[in-house]
Image 1: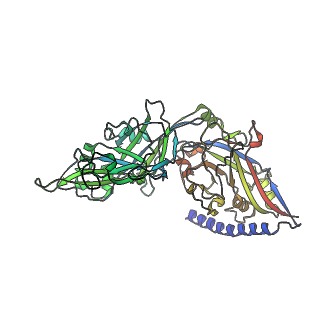
Image 2: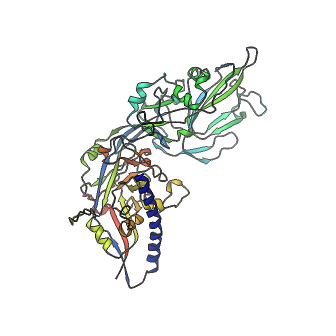
Amino acid sequence: MKKIVSNIAILLSIATIVSCDKDFNTIGSEVIGDDHFDFLIKDDVTLSAYTKRTGAVQSNNLPINSLGIYVDRYFGTTKSTFVSQLELNSIAPYFGNIREIQSTDSIYLYVPYFSEQTATGSGIEPNTFELKSVYGDSDNATLDLKIFENGYFLRNYNAVDPSVSQKYYSDEKTSLIENNLASAQLNDGSNLSENTQFKFNKEEIIIYKTNGSGAYLDSNGAVTTDDSKRVVKERLAPGMWINLNKSFFETKVLNAPDSKLINNNLFKEYFKGLYFQVDANSSGNSNALALLDFSKAYITMQYHTKEAATDEFKKKTFKLNLKGNTINFFENTFSSEYNDELTNTNAPNTDEFLYPKGGDGSVVFIDLFGDDDAGDDDLIPEELEELRSQNILINDAYLTFYVKNEEQKNSTRIFLYDATNNIPILDYIFDSSTATDPANNKFSYGGILEVVENVDTKYKIRLSSHINNLIKGTDPDTNKNVRLGLSVTQNINNGNRYGIKDPTLFGNTNLPIGSIMSPLGTILYGNHPSTDPSKKMKFEIYYTKPN
């Protein structure tokens, strides 16, 4: 109850701050040129910034999951595997009195990639696509992909306290899943591109009309061996296309007891899902990792059915959707350089560089305004108290971070948040700006990677409303000088947070969900760079002060 009251108070304060922030901006714009005001920049605020290892992170039911192996030139290697429950497309299906999967039938899995169409083919020619959210060498790298039946039931709720949703963590792959595999490899066909030489292919998938026995048809419905006369039945954007073991699905699904197909809750207990395992193969290049929306994936089962022995078989299809509970697992082999930095950091005001990294990597903590040195026990830094004592109007405030290039692939966005309360800062909440590409939404709040040829690469984040509330806010419950967190993010539009397995190790109970989804890391100049002091992180407050 206390938490609910506190949240209500915060929301009411936010509403007040919105109107105050608008008033300050208006006043600032009207007094330009007035001799009674000075327009100043304060850039000497005491800063403390350091990196903390997250350890294992909560990774079940993420909006987007990763699969593959990503090799970063600085941070090291991350292997990402995935497990998902399955759901019947329609419950209590009737497959017919006599049913079987024949040699001309297929059982295939389709998982769409994030892609963008770049050209339209003519006639039956394929359209051209480029893949998005694939990292590494997607054009050439191949993986050893294995798909198994999962034998571990993924719960909705905690076994000890059923009122709490179940949390699963990124380091539980072996104990939960790989020790409980319930089948042989299911993608066991002769097409190596679907298993030992799997590749994130950017080609459009085209399904042609057939006669039910596997022969292609022309526009007149006649069998044809001329590829140019085939008729396109369906076009699918680039995606994972895997043929699965027919015998397994005939036994497990087509001939399943009716009692297991009554609803999806019973089905999930019976068929506990699929596990996607990846390993490097002998090709020498297995550097490819994709972000995927598995909720759009499905398995199509083709089968033949009839009611009586004298009837003719009819070909039908049935779908299984990859929906329900999921877990993404991360297995890291960090570079010695990055590992040493994580081991030797955690001392405020001493870090030369900062290392926000996604997955179960690291997050940066930032404290503004220094310590409370007056000995008055109010825990308010003296620098902040001095600003509060002055009749100033906050016009803007920014944190700027310069990137150190160690040939890593930098995240396109970073995310600054309130790490004391594990919520977004006010500037993020208030920013409703949108862009053509949703990845660039909230561009006023910022955190967008700025890359200019032969010029410094940097991120710049606005925290004007946050600072305005610290200095001008009157509610002691919401104007506290909280610790800030800085992470990479895969989705700037999702400000939610997820749990940490070991809060004592990390120093916090949560971190942004966008950080968990990202495989990337970024190196930032900290508060004390010895090699190039001009690139130290900057905190600037633009304000108006009456004479």
